[in-house]
Image 1 (cartoon, helix red, strand yellow):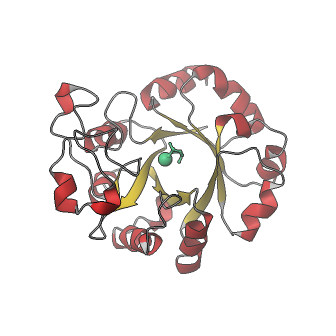
Image 2 (cartoon, protein in one colour):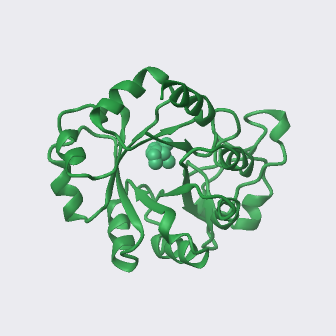
Image 3 (tube, protein in one colour):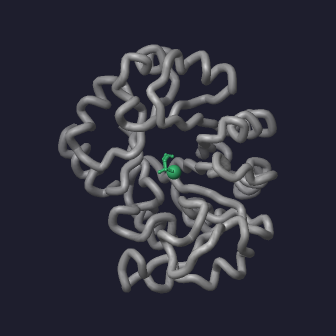
Length: 241
Ligand code: G3P
Ligand code: MG
């Protein structure tokens, strides 16, 4: 089962910061996941929420601030004083770390709340510029964005994200179309997953921080898990095999 560091190694480092990504890059795990928003001046930045309140020393919406304004804030101290120098990363800065490794990259487009115009196109252009097409999956809860990615870059893997328990997910995926399914932990063990797995579609599950779920997910045939504790999960899975 493939392990993805969720928002970098976010259980041990401040989520979606270069510190969290350097830690993930150091680990011999399969991949890493991170979330992308668009600034007022059209830059792709890596952060989970629409606002910076939870993960910085300031407040406000990402979409209302320029990159220069956002870069002035501290995105590490909320987690621990030792990370006070962390700033909001550009997508490019994160990709630069992983262009030196062989990790699989999951870029999650956070355009499901604010429909950031042109975001999917910009993300695709960045992946292509960095020549990371072959080891990137672009996912979103915004399935229109997933559709756009597939239209403009058919060679890049896409995934539809869901929180809900699904009925006939395989047909829905084919309609978008999307290559893979990224689904929440409770929904992953429902009967509807059987068809998807049997059809050979990659199913990855968020967020799996406890070892006790791994056995069940393995039995279902899940491809990968997103975890905030990639090193702990890696040690657990290595011990089991
Ligand atoms: O991409 C998997 C997972 O990150 C989706 O949920 O809210 O953690 O971005 P969230
Ligand atoms: Mg995410």
